[in-house]
Structures are given as structure tokens and as C-alpha cells.
Image (cartoon, rainbow, N blue to C red):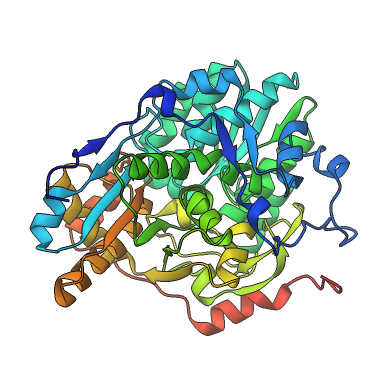
Length: 459
């Protein structure tokens, strides 16, 4: 196909927008291990999960056999404000790199929240409203999830309480103010409002916080208030289900022009955007219909896939959430205060973990300065200032394109551009001023954090 015969931006028509979410577990012969009750160490029941999560979301979480779930019309109507999102051919980047590779990115930053997180936030808020709840609690790292959820809760007139990892709360005041503008109450975590927050502040004075700790605080807040439930922006199967609209739209757009990608790349923190992007492609691989190179990119400062262990672990620092079998660095692991706050989680989605363990995908870790080098390069060439999280995928996509330049091999590369970085200017300032450094945890630090794993005999 001749260069420039494919549009710069491939937009789908509204009728082409997915009307169902795809559950990749249905096509997995070996399913992810079940969630366990932290008190009994037995598979968690729907009744137990319903004390924390909305009932309909619990059904989605536990259903590993239904391949497709209909998207309610009210959610579809909301999606239509910003979906379908464009699949962009990075012609300018290709030309600048002088690579024979074709590069595409799925851009999820064309909504007010600035990221893919709104895809699941609106779904979870909808089910909370349907259940007649007063409000929801949650955690947020970089702030994209908290922003998205505050928007969704505002739409459905729900109260929204957000525990924001302290280093991000301090680094990203404008993201915090967007949440407050949409009516959310934002608290830096660890706080002095919850038992787990007070405990963490006592044990680790001056701590910058972690997603694991913020999760514990949000769960404690939800379970101590009548009419509230906890919602999560990543990791869980229900979230990856909602985010499958990313991958489904990507595949529809590629098929529309007869394009078959060689590799699909996404940044990896808890697994929401990565899982959503790769699910339809992984499904084809599981069914024996196609073969792709699926790549997860994580920060070297929090390398759960590349250096973690595949075991049962607590999903939160306070050890109140269900146990999940996943690649983990240990629930007590507190990452350095890197600027990719959305990727500072000690574990990984059980679905992504299982796909990785089965060899259906690979993982790479990259250091912070290399990520921001790629982010700045991309911004100057493609005109979009990317979020630090998204820039992990950009880094590896560029590396792969440069390999093609060396070998002369023409590959088609697709990556997820999960959001914009316009609220991350403190990070860009540090990079531009030469003050940004790289931190890579030692083997001793990871070993220490993994010492307190729960003993789950029989699982």
C-alpha cells in the first residue's frame, strides 16, 4: 500500500462503535486464578465482594465464561461524547525516524479527563446509580482515574471521595483541582482520616504514599459509610472488560483498511489500558486465528512483571482487599516518587499476569529519563504532549521502529497513547531543567517486600 493512502486519523462512524465489551477470559483455556478472601483464604463469593463493590460489577468480575457483555444504552450515549477515538498514523514520526516501519497510535486523550480512564469510570458510576447508592470512594495515582471518576459521578449526581497518592497530590495540583471542580473531595494518601492512613504515617514518617495504601484507605472509607461502595480504576477484571472498547475500536479501524499489526504495545501499571488494548488481539491468539507480538512496558522503578513474582498477594497495603494471583513486588513495596504516578502499583492485573505467564505477551521495563526523552521527541514531532504513563509505550515503539531502520524490516507497530500530559508540567520541568533522575530498586529491596506474602496452600 502506498504511503499516505491511509488517512492520518482513522475515525470510525458511530454505527461502527462497539456495542459490547469483550471478556478475554472466555477464550482462555487456563483461566486466571480466583480471588481469595483474605480472612479465609478461600475463593471469594459474590456476597462477600458485594460488601465492597456494586452488585452488577461483582457479576462482571466473577464471570469468566461470557465472551461479550452488552453496553447499556445510557453508557453508550455518554461514550458518544468522545468515542470512537481516533487511530492515528504517525507519518511525521516515521519520517523523522527514517524507519520503514508503519506506526499507529490509539489516542485516548480526546476527552476532558484526558485519558482512557473515563471508559470504565462512567460504567462504574452508572452501576452505582442503578443500585441506588449515595456515592463511591476510590484511589488515584497520577490523577487521571480520579478526574475521570469525578466527571462520571457528577454526571450521575453521586458523591465522589478520592484518596490521591501524596506525591502526586503535591506534584499535580491542577489535576487535583479538576477533580474538585467536578465535585469530588480529594484527600492526600496516606491521610490521618483512616486507620490504615494513620498506621502508615506512623510506620513510615514522611512517606510519599503508594497506590496500595490509597486503595486501603478508599476501601475503609467505603465500608464505614452507609450507601457507599468502592470502585477501582485498574487491575480488576471488570475494569479490563470496560476498557476493551479501546482494543475493539483499534481492531475495527485496522480491519477497515486491511492492516494487520505485527506488534501491539501498551504501558503497564495495574493493567487497565494495556489489557483493554490487547484483549481482542490476545483473543485471536488464544483462538488460533492470528499471531501478534504483545508488549507491556513498565517503569524500571516499579517492575512488577519483569522482576516480580507470580504469586498470591494482597492488592492493597492494608491487606483488606481480596488476594489476587499476580506478578507482584509485594504489597509493602513503596515505589520511588516517579512522575508516572499511574504506574506506581506493586502488582498487575490477574488477566495480564496470566497472559504473560502463558507466554502470550512480553514485558519490558524502561527508566524515567529515557521515557521523557521519548515523550519530548514525540511531542515535537506529532504535536501531542503525552502523559508520562503513555510515554513508556512511546519509548518502546520508537525503539522498535529504529530496529526496523537498522534491519530494513517493515513492521506495523500499534501502541496505546492513553492520555495527555498537560497536567504533568512539573515532571516536564524537572526533565527540562536536568533535575530528573532514574531510580531502580535493588534486588534486596524487592526481596524484602516479598517476604511477607500470604501463604495460600492449595492455590
